[in-house]
Length: 160
Image 1 (cartoon, helix red, strand yellow):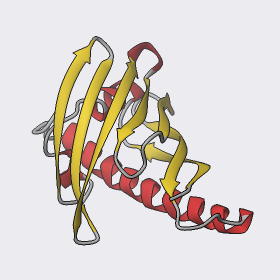
Image 2 (image 1 turned 180 degrees about the vertical axis):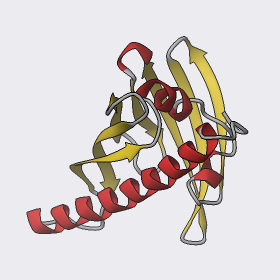
Image 3 (image 1 turned 135 degrees about the vertical axis):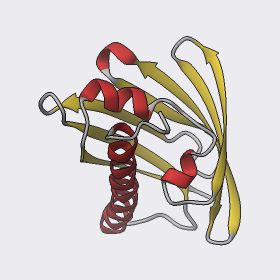
């Protein structure tokens, strides 16, 4: 099956400082999929300083999908990359950066290269629609995470 690829980007406001948002975002936990409103599990393996292997198994459209991702952290820049090593979007790569927006607010900037199988080649318009769909889904996921981050780092600090 041929592969298609497309770039997409988005940003989402976060209700906490950039430093707090970064620490929260890269503090990977087995129950992270619950925060994202999905059924799944995550295995986390620290490979070396700044290198983490995530193995995620998620329920998607009634079937299980497993993805392996290599995460590279850059704490001084409050950024990280996520490269898919196995799964349906193998070779996809994503970049995240947390930018300050004042002392108690920040924003996540996301740039993605999605590589995925396709039954046929897509026109430029079809690729643009696919990119818009994925951007909408991923931005919604980060808006959900933003709410969870605000709850976790607000008055109660129960999770992180």
